[in-house]
Length: 573
Image (cartoon, rainbow, N blue to C red; front, side, top):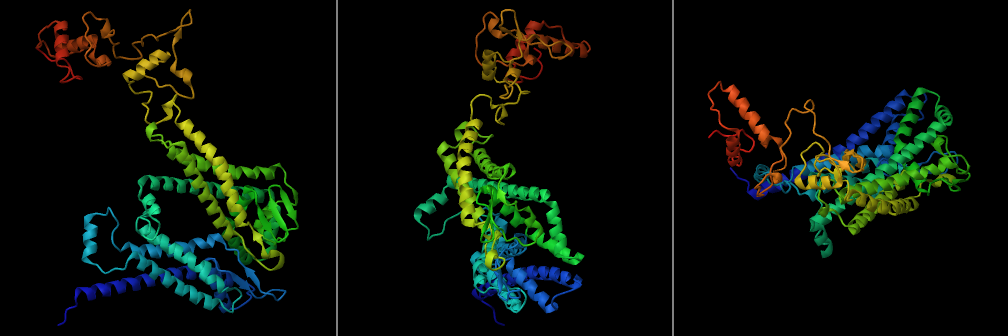
């Protein structure tokens, strides 16, 4: 018998793991292509008047799947005979392929070496079965397997009604697949922020190694994501309102594109796939640059200039009418204002946390820098999304259609920086103001027992001890009975019906021979009257077994044993 060496076993396991990652990438691409092909075939089968056979439907499905990755398509059959480009990507279709590539890379990299902080059992199990590929190997294998299916789909779509432009297969199709796979490997590694690559400058490596830098960067990314989300939500709201106002035109366009229910279902699916694009168009409109409706028309809040070249489609019914803009059009400028305020609010929450002391708050300089970095991220994200939200859908006047990314991105940066920085500073000052900290979670609640220092300050201000002053209603803390001379008098004792606890004794400073030694308890439990009442109750319940000791002697003995059991009854002599 021959025995394999450990090196041969490790090499064999690593090869099998790479092959498995390659197959996972190909399977992920096949799932996305198959799902879209099934949907296209269902529409083709149910159509009463198909334009081509099953081969044409399969080629069209392959072309639409490549379009979901950002590939540019070419439509050769046109009325003019000139091939027309189709470069507008339905953003809702992008989610499926990106998620499948991300999941395949994550599953291929999760079986690798455990990350830092993992339990010792997991690391021991990994050492017993070495030989798996590195995370870089898993990324390359998954990307290669996915791109093999992309190449096959591009070859299949050639000769169909929509074939892919070969120049767009490397960029952006390969870049989209590689980015999704890299995000999956990063997720499998626990989404670490650092360390920086060894080839990066030393200053960058030192900055990334600092915990403070990582926290500030994370806060900036969260604020940028919040601003971008509010911007997209505001754009979707603008489109919904415009469609509601022009519901008749949208309905006429929907019913005029197809006469049977199968065609209308296809139009409805296409409109749903283009809904995120419409939200980005609305965001670009609110930011100011607007969007192009052909080579000679632009729609902005100031008005619609030129003659638009509008195809007949339901979502395009939301386009404003020609002429100067009115007050409803100018109201769209509230969308970038809301996005800037969202960036400021999320930054101020991290700059002055409600559950942290004042000394841990950020300085104004740090707040400004993080807000500017968040504004930069919001502008970059807006530019990236608007770059794929539009594109050519024909030749001539339709060669420019949609928002212009190099105008929309800087506009988002200017709006969020100009409004977000002052708003973040004001919110930071508001959260760090000295009076009225009752909204902060580190301040005792009103129903808790007051501390001695807080009680003294409350007495000096004329407030009721034991009740925290609220910043929105400061008069609630000064519920005192005003006398004839206008001076506030302390509130009277509570009635017996309101409380069964006896009133505390006068302050011990008034007793003769008092010597202060420490903070005395203010609870009525330790008062003389309370001790006498407890002692009488215990004597009555003992059935005559307890002797009749004087109360003053019992109280003195209780004072001596107070340190051992301050909350219990007095001890017997």
